[in-house]
Image (cartoon, rainbow, N blue to C red; front, side):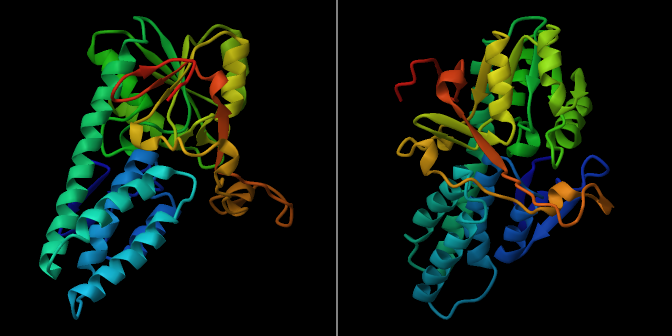
Length: 331
């Protein structure tokens, strides 16, 4: 099953319910989609690109319009709101802008709807294709017997299908290589333990769960040979990814372990530096509660950034659908 797809309306797997159950959400309005994005029912840069693309198509279908100009104004307005739902991950706006540009060329209300949905479907199909290419390229970096440490979730649930960093692992295993995975829990929302472990175990891939704070010990004991992570935005001097990635990169460098980033070219934002990117900050409740269980004093001050950035000098290579890019990074 794909993470996100269109069948009369927009459907997606509710990732907040995993690993207890795979449950689908139907989004019939843009507001429902935005809520799903903010709640992380749909997350992961490539999956958000598809969500943004489908969001424009959804906007064209969610209500009736008196004329074509009213419809186009409405699409532009909704596109801005969708694109800003999560500010750090650039793929969301890439998907929105791609479909919006195509849709605005339509010469009737029905034609706009057809164009928007067709282009959104194309975005989704291309994501699966490019992930397979990323996997094929990245598999060259893995040797038989490697143990890969990964962070957050970069597999099927972070994409339309297959995955980026986990797609590399899947492709290497498809090539006949014996690969094992160490998955960090990825606090505070545990995308590693809830999603990565779930999908790898479902596929029969050997995975061991560790706490985020065990990364140094695992590397010191020689239990990891490679690190592969995804990316939410790659700028000309850094890689943005889930908070904690920077720490792992530093520890990997100290222990002389290759640190690879797997991401499609749509994640690149080479007109900006790291200091120019807004880092999303999430709610204090994510840190002080686990479900209904209070983990900290209610009034404690909280700093909860969703992402950090890793300087490119700590990255051994970037794996894209086109090629593997090595330092010096002259994009």
